[in-house]
Image 1: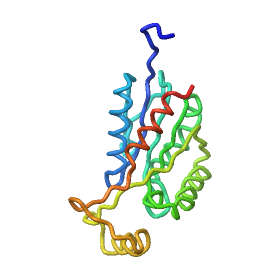
Image 2: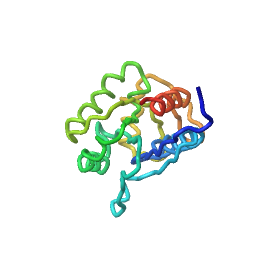
Image 3: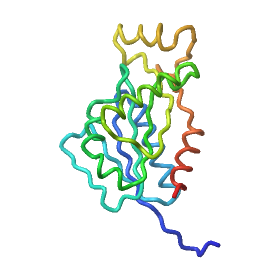
Length: 183
């Protein structure tokens, strides 16, 4: 029975973005969490001069992309350095990669996450693999060839404004809603 008064949470989203898709995912999560009347803070691990406090934080969402088989070093350093503080809250780790866009790439995408957890010693309460995007206009020749011939293979991808998003926004919304409801 609802009393008309619900305790709302404070959530922090800790992220790092390389090409912009993880930032876009972070903004989506922020809007979704705010729409559920929870307080949301963002912390970008690229801002090396900034500090973060976990005081009053109920849940932590961590999001970072994979490039060349690794999550950003700064993000991994943050996880290692904040391991004890993160244990005090429920955590959801979102690993963003193109490999997660294709069923035959899911095992490799999971391997990236396993390797990061081994390097950082951090074990989240929950983790999800989220498909990223391709932005060929931001790649050099070598990177564009890897994307075209290795990651995408025989798949033809239609580009809209020079990019193609593989992120399943509806599935991501379901995942964040479930995480917010977990006690």
